[in-house]
Length: 68
Length: 356
Ligand SMILES: [Zn+2]
Image 1 (tube, rainbow over the protein chains, first blue to last red):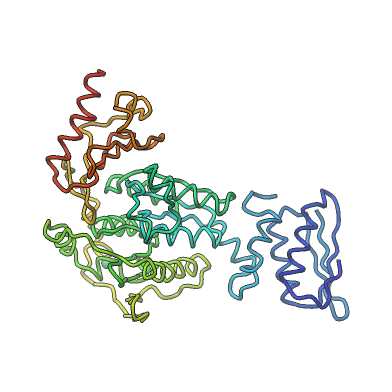
Image 2: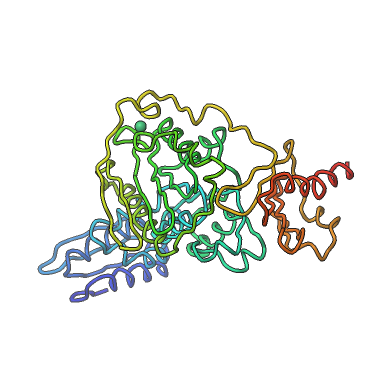
C-alpha cells in the first residue's frame, strides 16, 4: 500500500482495515513519507495481534512491513 | 487480537485521538488499560463517566444507590425519559448507556450506598476514583479509603453555577481533609441545612470536563501537579486556580487516623434524603425481594413499573415508592420520615411477614 503524500489518519485507517481482512501468516507492506504517520501506524499496529512490525528507511520514505 | 480492547475497528475508532500530540497509540493503550470507579451516578458522575468512556477507558465501575428520576434529566448526561419512567437504578442505566457507546469496554454497575465498610472493596482494584457524589461525608469516606489504599482520586464539588475540583494523589499533595475541615460534614448534615440545591447542566459539564481532563492526564502519566484547587464559575466562565498545601497535622493523610472509616454511620430506619423531596427507608435486616413476585400482590393500577432491580408503586397522586430488590425503598414526594416508614411497613414489611 503506497501512502506517499497522504497524511494520517487516512493511511492508518486503511492499514488496519486491510489487516482485519488479511488472515494469518500474511505480509502487508505500507509506504509513507511522513514520519509522524510512520510512527502512528507502527505503534497502533503493534497494539493488534500481529507477529512482527519492521520499519526501514528507503530514500525519501519509510517501508513498514507487517507480518500477521 | 490480544484482547477485545484492541481491534482494527477500535484503532479506527480512536484514530483521531491517536493523532493527538501527547496521546498517540501508547496513550491509547494506557487509557484502554485504565480502571476507574465512578462513585455516584448523578449530574457530575454521569458527565465524567461519559467523557471517560468515550476517551476509551477500558473498565468503569459505577456505584450508586438511587434510581433515575424525571427531575434528574435536565442535569444528567446519558439518562433518558424511558429510564426515569422505569425507575431504573442509576448505576444500571449508566452502565448500559456506556456499553452502547463502546461495547468493548467493561462496565460494573453496583447498586449500593457507599459506607465505611464497603468503600475499600469498591476501589481496591481500580487505578483512579472519580467523585460523582453529592455530599461531604461520602467524599471523606472516599478520601480516607483512598489514602489507606494509595489510590488517586478526583474531588468534584458543585452547587448552582459553581464548582470545585481537586485531583488528590495521596502522599504527593494535599488530601481533601487538608483542604476542607471535617466539621463541614456536620454543618452540611444539619437538618436546617438540608436544602434542595439547584444546579445548572452547562456548569456541570464545564466542571466535569476539568476533572476528567485531570483524570486523563493522570492516566497518560502527564499530570505533575497535585496541589491545584480549581474554583470554577460556570456563569462568568472563570477558572481560578489556588495552590493548596498539605496540612502537617492532617488526621487523614498525615496521622492516618481514617476517622471516616471507623464505624458505620448509624442508619436510622427512615431518613430524609438531603437534596431531594424523598425519604429512604432501610429494611430491618438483610433481605432480598423478587420484585416480579412482589408486584403480583399489589393492585395492578398502582404498579408504575417493575424490572429486576426496582418496582415503582403509586401511593397517592403526589407520593410514590421505589422498592429495590435489597429491601431498601425510597418514598418519593414527602420529607415526613414517620409517614414514609408507615407506608413502607404496610406495603413491604407487613406483606413479607404475611407471606412468611
Ligand atoms: Zn490530608
